[in-house]
Image (cartoon, rainbow, N blue to C red; front, side, top):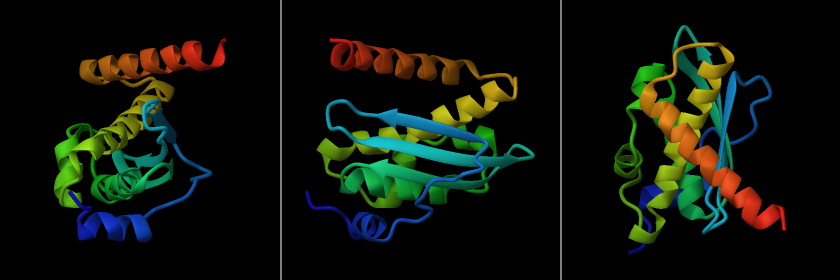
Length: 151
């Protein structure tokens, strides 16, 4: 399955690319199987995501997913952002090859990690499902660290 025109466009001309120096929170995630790494930077004011940027090292689908999530999440409340799913990203991209769907999940995980970081830093209540996802991602990071860096 070839990439959609929207995926190619988002890859060639990504929106909101770059490091945000004054971010309120950062979500960093990676996929050890493919090597993609994403950083998602967010600014929040009055519970609304007012700005979002990203840095991604990865394939066409990873860059396109990162770009699209910045467009989709800007202006949403934290609660609205937490309801986004990989399907939200896939709908905006116009599909990805099945082997690349994990890139949309990576983008959602980067967003969730940024929100988790923001809520934690500000001593705000963390929804149970967000805490569980964060723990899964932390366990994966720890496993990767043990497997690849502590030998």
